[in-house]
Length: 151
Image: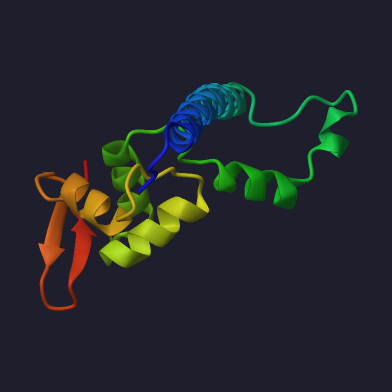
C-alpha cells in the first residue's frame, strides 16, 4: 500500500488513464460493431437482390455479362453468405429443409459455413433453442437428430 501522497496521486492518475483508455476502446469497439452490422445488412441485401433478379431472369443477358459469371465460383460465394443477417429460426428451417435430418452439431457447422453469425459462445444451445418448439422440426431420439417435417 502506498504510504505517501505522491504514490496515491500516481495511482489516481493510473486509474484515470486506464479509464480513459477503456472509454476510447469501448467507443472504437462500438464503431467497429456498427460498421460490421452495416456491412452484414448490405451483404444480406445484395444476396436477396441477386436471388430476386435470378428468379426473374434465370438466364444471364447475352451482352457478354454471362462470361463474367463463373457458375461454380458464383454458387460458392452465394452459399458462403446464404444465412448472413437471417434470424436463427429461419436459418435453421432452411438448413434443416435442405439437409432433411441432422444433429444439432451438423446444423451449427452448416449454418456457420454459410455465413450465420451466432450471438453466444455456445451455438449448439442457440440452435437447440431455435428448434425446440418448432412444428416443422421433430427430434428423433434414436440417432439424436432433428428431422424436417415440411411446410
